[in-house]
Image (tube, rainbow, N blue to C red; front, side):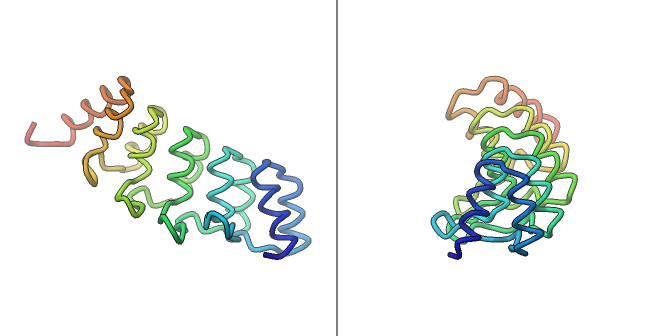
Length: 165
């Protein structure tokens, strides 16, 4: 990896939007740069860390919001969802991210939010069409860690979305 790319990825992890902007504009670095150690894109890293300003910069410079990790098939939306970064999740959703993409384990961003009890993120995802019944039941993800508000919300959504109930 080139030295500039290492500086770029480090600036993203730190949330240094000034350095990220400089490296994108002056050095012409690729907004879809991949961290070779994790296989995460620059955008995935910014989403994981919760740096909305950096996320916006990357998207403005052409970052692929639906890019998958080459190893896990995780996405930027899943990274933001698992850590409860509702502002980033909302930004990605407003910019057309695919809410239905699953990783290699069959888990979507909704699974990640439910597993970690991020009710505000769960509501956003469902508002944008995430399926509460997808790939092995999102409810189980919330139950595993005992996130009662998430469990109650999902039970309410099951009743609304499942005509058999």
